[in-house]
Image: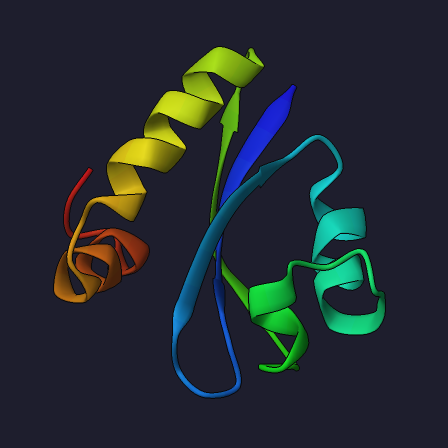
Length: 83
């Protein structure tokens, strides 16, 4: 099982990623050097969206699609107004 997730950073920016253990990964973003370089200087981060996938390939495809969205489109996705 893979999770696609979106984090909201302290500065209001959004970060998108995938993980196998979602809780552990969010904790890494907030406390560890293993968190993404982008989020390290923008702590704390908050999980604002997640979706489960059966395999890594599908999770990565959705991650790429979401990363291509505008900020406003991502916010609509987070709010549940679009798929």
